[in-house]
Amino acid sequence: MTGRWRVTRITLKSPHVKGRARAGPESVTGTGDDGRMLADVIDLLLCPVCGGRLTLGSGTVRCENGHGFDVARQGYVSLLTGSGVPGTADTPAMVAARADFLDRGHYAPLADAVAGWCGTADVIADAGAGTGHYLSRALSARTAEPGTTGRTAEPEAVGLTLDARTAERETVGLALDVSKHALKRAARAHPRIGAVVADVWRPLPVRDASVDVLLNVFAPRNAAEFARILKPGGTLVVVTPTAAHLRPLVDRLGLLSVDADKDRRLEETLADRFAMAVQDDLEIPLALDHEAVEAVVGMGPSAWHTGGETLGKKIRELPDPVHVTASFRLSTWVVQK
Ligand SMILES: C[S@@+](CC[C@H](N)C(=O)[O-])C[C@H]1O[C@@H](n2cnc3c(N)ncnc32)[C@H](O)[C@@H]1O
Image 1: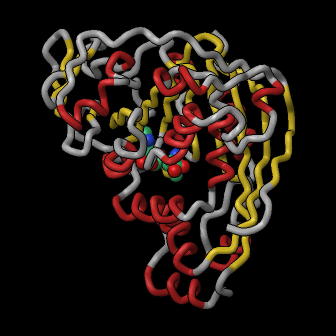
Image 2: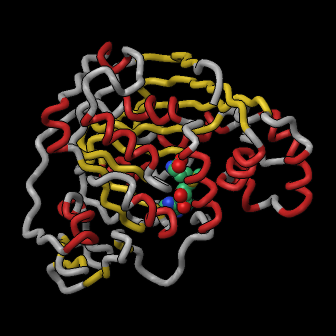
């Protein structure tokens, strides 16, 4: 990564990020490494078959009506019912490319910005969490010293404070994604992440009004379900790419471009249940070597449509490094109940 990143504030109302005492877990038993990863979030989850409360047993999550779900060796649990997984689930190759690219730190300013919006939340969920990169950063920021989230003064400016002593004990993260390949990584991305396979287009296996902050970073949205699982006054943090995102690469490699109408569609999707609080634009100048270009192409929507020798040849013809700008829009939305 090179250069200085820049945030442009578009609008400012008053984001209402709340922290509340979290209900204690009920009858959760430790089950070794795999179970422990879910112990922090089990009291947030619902049986996808009957809607009953879940408890964690030995390698299994089970409801009061006897529906059981195996905890995978890697620590996630699938609460997806039926046999079909949506075709939008990230593949192992996409997940590997995403992990490779994000591990290089290119989007660190974005992860810091997202973490900065988590305020004093006790429960942070991430819908379409992928490898858990952003959720993990948000949880780490809650244990950091005040002022080290990388975020500028905005959270303090709206009255949010970071209490490092209580954060470590209280804040938990729930990673939701339909790709088990992504969740294998998310489950291990942070000790307080619980990872659950779920489809955002279906009822989420999450209790009503149980989440303080819900992240949604380049992932599908379900306004009704998001509003249901957020606590009254809870905040949805949405990140979308702008039409300028990676533009020279989009043109030179023939990648899918961002729909110019995206903002209007986002607003339309959320407007019934949410009120927009803040909108920021974040631009990060990047110098990408060819491996990083391959990774950023492989992790994005173009991975479904492009690839092969032609793409490889086009990448090799790029300058090394190639200078591009990552361009994101962050918006926070307060649930209206
Ligand atoms: C572009 S990736 C973003 C991942 C992560 N938020 C990040 O930025 O690193 C989109 C994610 O949404 C997940 N996804 C796609 N369709 C989904 C659905 N119907 N329900 C839940 N997750 C879905 C994919 O598996 C993938 O992990």
